[in-house]
Image (cartoon, rainbow over all chains, first blue to last red):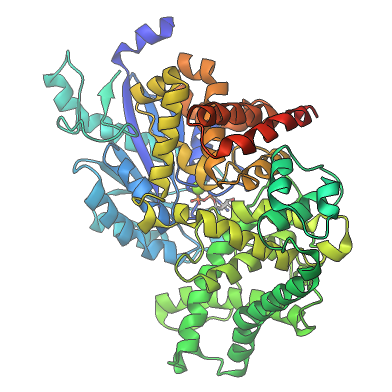
Length: 208
Length: 399
Ligand SMILES: Nc1nc2c(ncn2[C@@H]2O[C@H](COP(=O)(O)OP(=O)(O)O)[C@@H](O)[C@H]2O)c(=O)[nH]1
Ligand SMILES: [Mg+2]
């Protein structure tokens, strides 16, 4: 409870994992939050949720991470979470070209449903499977550049770049927020520009 | 229960009332009872043989039609899909997309028990003819070819006939052994082909899994050897009643999942206002957890023996699946202390990982029944009679 009072300067960022089913979103999240890898995750139905606290630039940041189901059917459920997200990780599988081809579809989804200043990041997962690779790192980079977003290849299995990806995303959100925060030292910061309408889920970014 | 089942013409209402309090865990009773209350078997025993025979033949026809024939056609046609502009290829590719989607989920069904990764007892069910074995194999192999050729096609327009799946553990030698998850995969594929409106939606695997589990473990071999076909009809029946939960375009309708979740929250508000208020204040929306609870009939929230016991009660609900709402509310009230003291993060975690904190499934069912009876007594309607009978049977709860 003492801890609670120290949390005064802490921040809460809401992140969302999206991408086709089977690309490894749940594994990426578990690697990041629990540092484990399990090949046998059951399929995500609707949404899942994890919290992890990280320290960046001397600040404690609580990351509230929402893991979504990839199938079309769940879009009405999952897109309602886009709105309040501060950051979105869009994941594809470097061994499944179809999941790469769908990136544009996912990006369109973000444009339609997320707030304008959401930080986006492209993740090419399963980079440990070099022998099965069908999408080169260059192609991933290129798409990311075209869309002006950062890109990492990761492996949840071998623990490659997972932490780096999340931390980079969190840092980018933090940096974006800084100027606003300076003008609003005393009050809570709302990146959504006062948008209160979104449902609970990943609501707007706020000071705790 | 044996008494009810021994009648020439089974009293379904009576059977349901009994089943509500649970089927015995050993023997063949549950598999038989589920077939009956899910209408995969007529109540009149004289009709059993004919019905079963025709259902099983039908199912094998579906398998031939959707799996074996397309494979044979493909193999007799030109080996180069690009030279063929007919529909068959188009359909074939689409089928393979569908299959790879189903495969991913069938593969990761109930990883905490070994059953689904064990060899199926009746791999090439003998009601299907011998070529079935090759049909199954061909399907698997072609599946790989097409997956990789598609990817290759999208890159440079040529077809590579190399294998590429993420099925690391299945050697080619092992292809001859069919595992239980592969039976589930085939069942879901046939269902998807027959139900073009829904096709395959993630989560259907979690509905069919426990049904197949129960039917295929029937110690009576005469029954269990036909588990696959019979599962298909039980599953089809369950789906016909919960299908709207799976269909996106139904989401906002009165029978859709949002309405169902809203009704459950209303029920919670009525029966445990404090818990409702906590969830409401913390903006924990029904879709954050109830969506999964309800579409999957709670199968991801508990271990499989408990799911099966719960489904005895859910399936025997005379206003199927009304009781599900009460079960969800019961769970929430049973973990109320935790919920009331927890913050948003704690509560979300709790609601999404209930299997560690849930009390015994019988306690949940009893609580849910209690809540339902309370409501029924208040609204005293035609159900009150049916209910007092059920109350009498309460003693069956002690296990
Ligand atoms: N080799 C490898 N396999 C992975 C990796 N991440 C996930 N997988 C596998 O990919 C499959 C799907 O993973 P999952 O996290 O459930 O995918 P989701 O549907 O996007 O959540 C599982 O069988 C995982 O074991 C990875 O980094 N490397
Ligand atoms: Mg997942």
